[in-house]
Image (cartoon, rainbow, N blue to C red; front, side, top):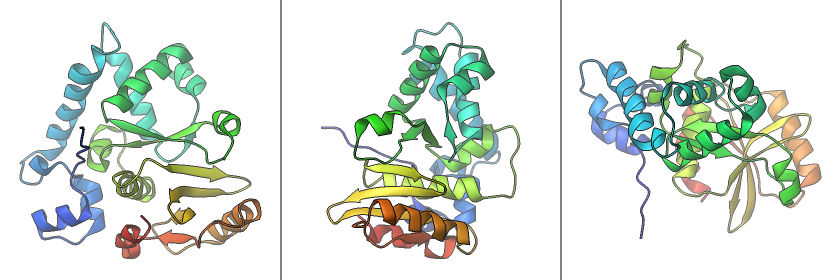
Amino acid sequence: LSHELFPFNFKEYQAATKSSNVFGLIESGGFPATFDFPKPQQLLQQYFVDIIDKDIRERVAARSSRAIQAVVKMVFESIGSEISLRRIAGSVQLSPETVNHYLQACEDAYLIFSCPFFAYSENQRQRHNRKYYSIDTGLRRAVVTQRTTDYGKDFENLVYLSLRAKTKDIAYWRGNGEVDFVVQTDRGITPIQVTVGEPQARHEDALAEFYKKFPHANEALFVTPDSFEQIDQII
Protein backbone atom coordinates (compact mmCIF):
# COMPACT_ATOMS: atom_id res chain seq x y z
CA LEU A 1 0.00 0.00 0.00
CA SER A 2 1.17 3.51 -0.75
CA HIS A 3 0.59 6.62 1.32
CA GLU A 4 0.84 10.17 0.02
CA LEU A 5 2.87 12.54 2.17
CA PHE A 6 2.66 16.26 1.45
CA PRO A 7 4.61 19.23 2.79
CA PHE A 8 3.13 20.68 5.99
CA ASN A 9 -0.44 21.91 5.76
CA PHE A 10 -1.67 24.99 7.59
CA LYS A 11 -2.37 23.21 10.89
CA GLU A 12 1.05 21.54 10.86
CA TYR A 13 2.68 24.85 9.94
CA GLN A 14 0.91 26.54 12.87
CA ALA A 15 2.09 23.85 15.28
CA ALA A 16 5.68 24.03 14.04
CA THR A 17 6.06 27.82 13.83
CA LYS A 18 3.44 29.11 16.32
CA SER A 19 2.21 31.37 13.51
CA SER A 20 -1.38 31.59 12.32
CA ASN A 21 -0.56 33.72 9.29
CA VAL A 22 -1.63 32.08 6.02
CA PHE A 23 0.68 34.39 4.09
CA GLY A 24 3.60 33.15 6.19
CA LEU A 25 2.90 29.63 4.94
CA ILE A 26 2.64 30.94 1.38
CA GLU A 27 6.04 32.62 1.70
CA SER A 28 7.92 29.80 3.41
CA GLY A 29 6.08 26.81 2.04
CA GLY A 30 5.55 23.60 3.96
CA PHE A 31 8.96 21.92 3.83
CA PRO A 32 9.83 21.86 7.56
CA ALA A 33 13.62 22.00 7.14
CA THR A 34 13.30 25.51 5.73
CA PHE A 35 11.63 26.95 8.84
CA ASP A 36 14.90 27.31 10.79
CA PHE A 37 17.33 27.27 7.87
CA PRO A 38 19.39 30.49 7.56
CA LYS A 39 18.89 30.70 3.78
CA PRO A 40 15.54 29.02 3.05
CA GLN A 41 15.32 30.30 -0.53
CA GLN A 42 18.59 28.60 -1.43
CA LEU A 43 17.48 25.36 0.19
CA LEU A 44 14.22 25.38 -1.76
CA GLN A 45 16.08 26.10 -5.00
CA GLN A 46 18.30 23.11 -4.27
CA TYR A 47 15.22 20.97 -3.62
CA PHE A 48 13.96 21.97 -7.06
CA VAL A 49 17.24 21.02 -8.75
CA ASP A 50 17.49 17.73 -6.86
CA ILE A 51 13.92 16.67 -7.62
CA ILE A 52 14.44 17.25 -11.33
CA ASP A 53 17.89 15.67 -11.46
CA LYS A 54 17.18 12.64 -9.28
CA ASP A 55 13.47 11.96 -9.73
CA ILE A 56 12.63 13.21 -13.22
CA ARG A 57 15.57 13.46 -15.61
CA GLU A 58 16.45 9.76 -15.50
CA ARG A 59 12.79 8.81 -15.78
CA VAL A 60 12.45 10.65 -19.10
CA ALA A 61 15.98 9.73 -20.28
CA ALA A 62 16.91 13.38 -20.81
CA ARG A 63 20.57 14.24 -21.33
CA SER A 64 20.22 17.52 -19.48
CA SER A 65 17.84 18.85 -16.86
CA ARG A 66 17.78 22.38 -18.31
CA ALA A 67 14.86 21.75 -20.66
CA ILE A 68 12.85 20.11 -17.87
CA GLN A 69 13.59 23.04 -15.57
CA ALA A 70 12.43 25.46 -18.28
CA VAL A 71 9.15 23.58 -18.69
CA VAL A 72 8.46 23.49 -14.96
CA LYS A 73 9.38 27.15 -14.47
CA MET A 74 6.92 28.12 -17.20
CA VAL A 75 4.23 26.06 -15.48
CA PHE A 76 5.10 27.68 -12.14
CA GLU A 77 4.75 31.13 -13.71
CA SER A 78 1.29 30.16 -15.00
CA ILE A 79 -0.07 28.61 -11.79
CA GLY A 80 -3.85 28.68 -11.73
CA SER A 81 -4.20 29.51 -15.43
CA GLU A 82 -5.02 27.25 -18.33
CA ILE A 83 -1.90 26.51 -20.34
CA SER A 84 -1.48 24.51 -23.53
CA LEU A 85 1.23 22.07 -24.43
CA ARG A 86 1.82 23.95 -27.67
CA ARG A 87 2.40 27.22 -25.87
CA ILE A 88 4.98 25.64 -23.57
CA ALA A 89 6.57 23.77 -26.48
CA GLY A 90 6.93 26.96 -28.50
CA SER A 91 8.56 28.79 -25.61
CA VAL A 92 11.11 26.11 -24.74
CA GLN A 93 11.63 24.81 -28.29
CA LEU A 94 10.48 21.27 -27.67
CA SER A 95 7.76 19.20 -29.30
CA PRO A 96 4.33 19.10 -27.59
CA GLU A 97 4.81 15.34 -27.16
CA THR A 98 8.09 15.86 -25.28
CA VAL A 99 6.53 18.57 -23.10
CA ASN A 100 3.66 16.23 -22.26
CA HIS A 101 6.16 13.49 -21.40
CA TYR A 102 8.07 15.84 -19.10
CA LEU A 103 4.93 17.12 -17.38
CA GLN A 104 3.67 13.60 -16.74
CA ALA A 105 7.02 12.68 -15.19
CA CYS A 106 6.83 15.81 -13.02
CA GLU A 107 3.39 14.73 -11.84
CA ASP A 108 4.64 11.24 -11.11
CA ALA A 109 7.42 12.80 -9.02
CA TYR A 110 4.89 14.99 -7.14
CA LEU A 111 6.51 18.24 -8.27
CA ILE A 112 3.32 19.50 -9.94
CA PHE A 113 -0.35 18.55 -10.16
CA SER A 114 -2.64 18.99 -13.14
CA CYS A 115 -6.23 20.14 -12.75
CA PRO A 116 -8.58 19.18 -15.62
CA PHE A 117 -11.70 20.89 -16.91
CA PHE A 118 -14.88 19.76 -15.20
CA ALA A 119 -17.36 17.93 -17.40
CA TYR A 120 -19.19 14.64 -17.22
CA SER A 121 -18.05 13.90 -20.77
CA GLU A 122 -14.49 12.68 -21.24
CA ASN A 123 -14.50 14.19 -24.72
CA GLN A 124 -15.28 17.64 -23.30
CA ARG A 125 -12.61 17.28 -20.63
CA GLN A 126 -9.97 16.44 -23.20
CA ARG A 127 -10.86 19.40 -25.41
CA HIS A 128 -9.84 21.90 -22.73
CA ASN A 129 -6.38 22.76 -21.46
CA ARG A 130 -5.38 21.88 -17.93
CA LYS A 131 -4.34 24.12 -15.08
CA TYR A 132 -1.29 23.24 -13.02
CA TYR A 133 -0.28 23.70 -9.39
CA SER A 134 3.00 23.32 -7.52
CA ILE A 135 3.63 20.87 -4.70
CA ASP A 136 4.63 23.82 -2.50
CA THR A 137 4.08 27.57 -2.64
CA GLY A 138 7.45 28.35 -1.07
CA LEU A 139 9.20 26.17 -3.65
CA ARG A 140 7.35 27.92 -6.47
CA ARG A 141 8.21 31.37 -5.16
CA ALA A 142 11.88 30.39 -4.80
CA VAL A 143 12.06 29.24 -8.42
CA VAL A 144 10.01 31.77 -10.40
CA THR A 145 11.86 34.67 -11.96
CA GLN A 146 9.95 37.40 -10.16
CA ARG A 147 8.34 37.10 -6.75
CA THR A 148 5.58 39.59 -6.04
CA THR A 149 3.38 40.63 -3.14
CA ASP A 150 0.34 39.58 -5.17
CA TYR A 151 -0.59 36.39 -3.35
CA GLY A 152 -3.56 35.50 -5.56
CA LYS A 153 -1.92 32.66 -7.49
CA ASP A 154 -0.15 31.30 -4.42
CA PHE A 155 -3.29 31.33 -2.30
CA GLU A 156 -5.17 29.46 -5.02
CA ASN A 157 -2.27 26.99 -5.11
CA LEU A 158 -2.51 26.57 -1.33
CA VAL A 159 -6.24 25.89 -1.53
CA TYR A 160 -5.65 23.33 -4.27
CA LEU A 161 -3.05 21.52 -2.12
CA SER A 162 -5.47 21.41 0.82
CA LEU A 163 -8.11 19.85 -1.41
CA ARG A 164 -5.67 17.49 -3.13
CA ALA A 165 -4.50 16.10 0.20
CA LYS A 166 -8.05 14.82 0.66
CA THR A 167 -9.18 13.89 -2.87
CA LYS A 168 -8.05 13.57 -6.47
CA ASP A 169 -11.49 14.54 -7.79
CA ILE A 170 -10.69 18.22 -8.35
CA ALA A 171 -11.35 20.15 -11.54
CA TYR A 172 -12.03 23.69 -12.71
CA TRP A 173 -14.84 25.00 -14.89
CA ARG A 174 -15.01 27.82 -17.39
CA GLY A 175 -17.80 29.40 -19.36
CA ASN A 176 -17.79 33.15 -19.84
CA GLY A 177 -16.40 33.23 -16.31
CA GLU A 178 -14.42 30.73 -14.27
CA VAL A 179 -15.12 28.59 -11.23
CA ASP A 180 -11.74 27.97 -9.64
CA PHE A 181 -12.46 24.46 -8.41
CA VAL A 182 -15.21 21.86 -8.67
CA VAL A 183 -14.85 19.07 -6.12
CA GLN A 184 -16.69 15.75 -6.31
CA THR A 185 -17.92 14.52 -2.92
CA ASP A 186 -20.35 11.90 -1.66
CA ARG A 187 -22.95 14.67 -1.57
CA GLY A 188 -22.38 15.69 -5.20
CA ILE A 189 -20.29 18.43 -6.81
CA THR A 190 -19.28 21.57 -4.90
CA PRO A 191 -18.08 24.70 -6.75
CA ILE A 192 -15.36 26.73 -5.00
CA GLN A 193 -14.25 30.29 -5.63
CA VAL A 194 -10.89 31.44 -4.23
CA THR A 195 -10.01 35.06 -3.55
CA VAL A 196 -7.52 36.90 -1.37
CA GLY A 197 -9.89 39.85 -1.01
CA GLU A 198 -13.67 40.14 -0.91
CA PRO A 199 -15.65 38.14 -3.50
CA GLN A 200 -16.26 40.14 -6.66
CA ALA A 201 -19.16 40.29 -9.10
CA ARG A 202 -17.21 38.14 -11.55
CA HIS A 203 -17.17 35.31 -8.98
CA GLU A 204 -20.95 35.47 -8.59
CA ASP A 205 -21.52 35.75 -12.34
CA ALA A 206 -19.40 32.66 -12.99
CA LEU A 207 -21.32 30.71 -10.35
CA ALA A 208 -24.67 31.77 -11.79
CA GLU A 209 -23.53 30.48 -15.18
CA PHE A 210 -22.26 27.26 -13.59
CA TYR A 211 -25.59 26.60 -11.82
CA LYS A 212 -27.48 27.02 -15.08
CA LYS A 213 -25.47 24.11 -16.46
CA PHE A 214 -25.32 22.10 -13.22
CA PRO A 215 -28.47 23.05 -11.26
CA HIS A 216 -28.11 20.20 -8.78
CA ALA A 217 -24.65 21.24 -7.58
CA ASN A 218 -24.14 21.89 -3.87
CA GLU A 219 -23.97 25.39 -2.40
CA ALA A 220 -20.82 27.21 -3.48
CA LEU A 221 -17.97 27.88 -1.08
CA PHE A 222 -15.94 31.08 -1.11
CA VAL A 223 -12.44 30.59 0.30
CA THR A 224 -10.50 33.61 1.57
CA PRO A 225 -7.52 33.75 3.94
CA ASP A 226 -9.98 34.33 6.80
CA SER A 227 -12.10 31.29 5.89
CA PHE A 228 -9.28 29.07 4.68
CA GLU A 229 -9.78 26.39 7.33
CA GLN A 230 -13.40 25.82 6.19
CA ILE A 231 -12.03 23.62 3.42
CA ASP A 232 -12.10 20.74 5.88
CA GLN A 233 -15.90 20.91 5.80
CA ILE A 234 -16.08 20.02 2.11
CA ILE A 235 -14.78 16.47 2.15
